[in-house]
Length: 268
Image 1 (cartoon, rainbow, N blue to C red):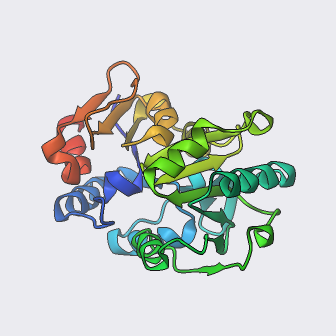
Image 2: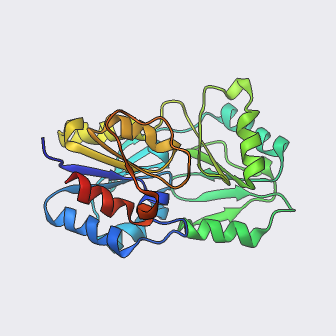
């Protein structure tokens, strides 16, 4: 069965580690769309983080955002999932307890965030800019972070602090989904939000079967959609490879910044 839809993770998959899209990846995406294949983004970013990418590549299909917590098609909401206020309080408390971590509350329109006084704000700003998260504002205290309409919480800090926060995760919020896209970044979602479920919702709306779908990703949060798709490709960025679905292809390390182009060349 031929591929009719391609779902792409953004950070580390479509883009390199500096947030840039290689000419090869951009060309491959445009060629696929010109051939009649629908290409969509499935990312941890909110809408504001992908709008310029969609304009750059000419993409106008559905969007899977916040690791699957929000699915949009134009102005229409196909799915949304918000964290519970009590869970959010416990997540924020964990970030404060571990220390050395900035916490970002992803709301659909804007990102309020808090950072400890000893954190390098220039480093933090550079990271957020690389993710194209320009609609943001800092709050004076962690207690000022929102408890309503939050799709995802992101922890940003040094690798050791983020690892410790996840390794000592409190039992009372053990039901939440956690993952790491980069060593300095941790992500928290509801247990019912993931890219695989969101991709199945998109396919249901479009009348597509998993066998007609290719998914390409590079991290833990991409595994559910790689498992759902009939064709799965993992972009390898380090020595460790997670347990992948059977038949998944792995992009050679030397091709990682052109991973989408490599995937389309080898699977289409």
